[in-house]
Image (cartoon, rainbow over all chains, first blue to last red; front, side, top):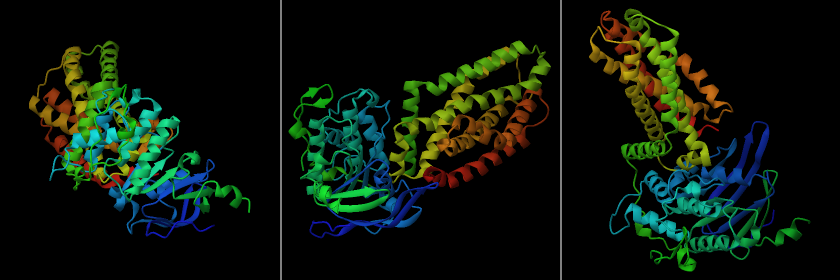
Length: 238
Length: 258
């Protein structure tokens, strides 16, 4: 495994010898890695390489069969306020509007009304919906949104509580190129504000020049870490 | 930190995209504290009631199922008033037990669509709050069903309580809670099984036998005027306390099981 070309920053996520088995199938096989804070990490690999399982393990949704994951020194579930998770499915109620969905999830995180000059819960939800490029006044249920709009609202749900670490599983799938570039710009700005971002994707070209690190997975293991997605082409054949 | 500028609406997507994708969200907006258990429970309950009100999936199915039971049994038997009183308790509660399966399955099926349950699992909200909200939601649904069906049972079977009719109220409340608390728990347990619609009754019915015996016997005693139903009411109360405590204690394990 090659060392990353990125200057050292404090590790915020530490994965130590993590094995995740589903019955006899090992989705992760002894993954060990440290991920720096305030960086944009892109996880790449073929289907079944273990990308989603690694992301779910970091999110605390898949408990490792062996090994440990630490988020700023805490177990994933203890650090849940610092984690924003966007899965491949939308994690939204199709029968409710974007505002209704976000209002409900805001309450799960204990986001209250106007305090010390902060925004009221509804104002915050509107602001986050606007931040992902949608209209908060849209009353249609999310089930009637296009796939791209659903992805955006899903991202809005993930960033609603202002997490320090964002875990995004294929956020650009079924999203048109223009919208995908806007999402990348939003994520890039969030990284510039100090957030740590993990993106699992099959479209690394969208993130070239934006991401700080490309992590390559094969058969449940991290096999390479590069600063550019082009580097892997030569390094992988070495 | 600024809020995004006013936008031009174009069917949901905002037109002024450069400003619209504004990452500078108000830091001051996120006033997070430990969410209160009861306010969280209320939020989830209100959300479930809203979803059920919009779809009416569970309620319609439950009412039609119970209606069928009432009508089919009233045509199958032609009991006199005395026999009706003797069997009505069993008929009523078995109809409600079977009908409640529909609501219990629907409760969690809604959380499986789009894997919304994962959004709850990664949040700091306590699992017990989710369980309680789901159980209360099912309690409300089954109570509405009972309120709709009770007059029909009375009319079709010519029922009249010979014992203290007021005792039917605690029997109904405790019996309904006994059905839904276990049902909600076992529906969550069978969530990740392949044939969960079959699995739920297989898990729920055997463990509900003591409660069903008590609710049927209590109803029979009250309708027949055959002494006091106090013993069965205490049994139901004990059953409810034991299984509510056990369900609350074990639900976190069930929620995070893979």
